[in-house]
Image (cartoon, rainbow, N blue to C red; front, side):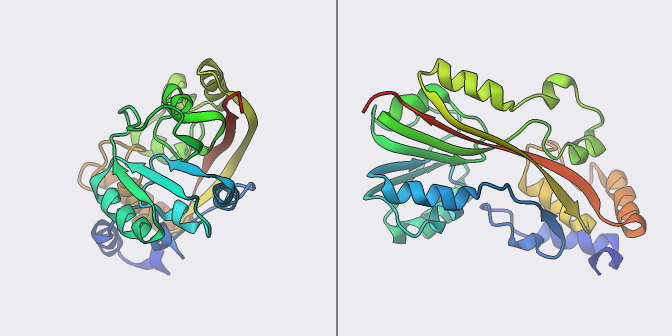
Length: 256
């Protein structure tokens, strides 16, 4: 088992693994995360098949968008991280999708009422005014988002207890209020708390290198003592268990 390999070997392997895109196949056999019950990629694909013009915001490496068997006649994706822009371009251009390099906190580089569907999986932040602006009347925003205190067992193992305002960030009720303030109405909201298991320290290192906002100052060198202690704990006690939180939100712009 990987947990019986040396700390140095597991960490070296994790540090050398590429972290571009949102392909999590590297974790196979090393970490697991329960999936939300609503099947976001399949639900997104159904909506894309009915759309005439769609935008996928913060597409990552384009993996979720590429899952859809049918794309609308006009399909655009934005992404802010250059390695992901390149990966998404290579994956999506053969499908007829245009990938636009756009910073996550910049206004969306599109005209008003350009799309009848906007999607986003795990956006860093949702700029509701911009979503409402680029949606056509009657258009839909469909998104799976990270919920409050997600994987905080990992975060607090390295950073210590977090203040309540940090733990309570990404509240789905706040998202609903912000959507409504932007002139959208909430058609659906669902929440889930999902079990995660890390079976070796390499999986923890790779996770923190890939999901960089969890422990923003993470390096192996900075946290070596904590990593070694956690490695010994996994070897002696079994997987390190955490819980992710997710919510699904679907909003619509009034009109036809």
